[in-house]
Image (cartoon, rainbow, N blue to C red; front, side):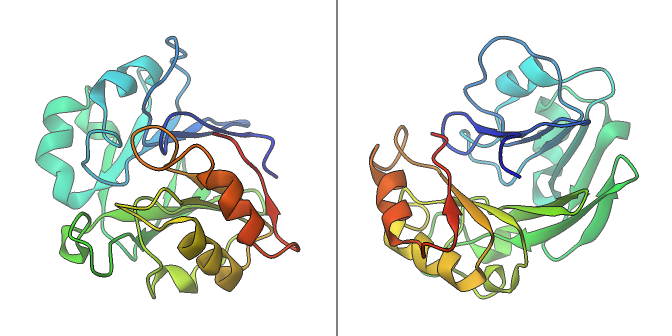
Length: 211
């Protein structure tokens, strides 16, 4: 359920299998050029990195990004417009014809870094019978508390997102089978944030440290 997941710097996530899915590719090593679909959550430089997209894209790679990023993505992503989809929070769609996706709002409750009106997105991606929730940069918000998933990848580094305690409360509320902490230990957050998060999550929920 989680063996196919790797987390690079920050919130750069790769989910492998018959098809390869990336979320916010950043800090990519080498030039794997193996992405079938790339999802972008928002426009901050550590989440939308054209340099890293160039390392993983193929000729037919699909890209999904928030609608408010349309001009920027079309100018900078280096992917043909026919292969790009723009989405809003709360939308249901599919990629590669068979993989269902739902966009989840991602924003701060009080902090100004990710505002609700910006239209930034987390994603729930269905691969077979497993639902993966990639939260993006978000706080513990009401829309996210409605997510039903098997695996949740959530930011825990604080400052711009939830801190370890807040993220644990959130995970203990939505109760996935497994959780993976992200967004800590480099640009923001301490190296021990992942372990601190793990200690606070209910024991019935598996926590995997990948950063």
